[in-house]
Length: 274
Image 1 (tube, one colour):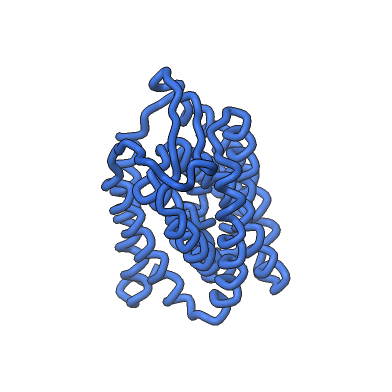
Image 2 (cartoon, helix red, strand yellow; image 1 turned 90 degrees about the vertical axis):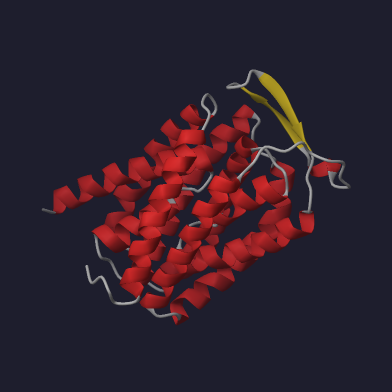
C-alpha cells in the first residue's frame, strides 16, 4: 500500500503543480487540501509539506516565466521584503494555533480566492507615479505586446505582508492573495501577475518551510513525490499558460475552491470527521 500512497501523491502533485503554475498559486492551495482531506495528516505536518511543494513548483514556473519575460522582477523583489517577513511570522503563529483554526482559516481564504478570481475584470492602466516598476511582455495568445503601470503600490506592500503571514500559517505560498490583489487592485495583467507571483511564492514558502523543518514537522518520505510531481506539473502548466486564455479554467477553479472551502469549514466545526 505504501507504493500506492507515493504514486497517488505524485499524481495529484502533477495536477496541483500544473494548475498552480497557470494561475500563479504555486500549487500549495491544492496540496494542502490533499494532505488534509485525502491523507488526513496532522495540520502542521500538512502545512510543512505543502510549503516544500510550493518551493519546487516555483523553481520550475519561476524560471520559465523569467525566460519568457512575463515576470516583473523589480516589483517582485520590492514586495518580497514584506512577504518573507510575513512568512516567518506566520510560521511561528501557525505552531501556536490549533488544527481546527488552521482549517477554518484555509476555508475562508479559499472562499476569498474563489470570489477574487471570478470578479477580475480587464481595465486600462491609468497614469501612476510607480511607472518605474511597470513592465511589458509579449502575449502569445493575443499576439501583441502588453505594457502596464503599477497602481496602489502601498496596498500591494500591505497585501504582501498579509499574504506572507497567511502562507506561513496554512502553507499555500501566498499566491492566492497576491494574484487577485496584483490583478484587480494594482492593475497588473493576469499573466504578468501570475508569473510574478510564481517567482515570489517560492521564496515566501522557503522562509516558512525552514521554520517548520527546524521543528521536525517535515515528512521527508512524502516530500519527495510531492516535489517531483509538482515540478512536472509546473513545467506542463507554464507551457500551457503562455498560449491559452484562462477564463474557463478560472471558473472551474472558483467552483472547486468553494467546494473545498465548505468541506474544510465543516471539518473545523466538527460536522465532518474524515
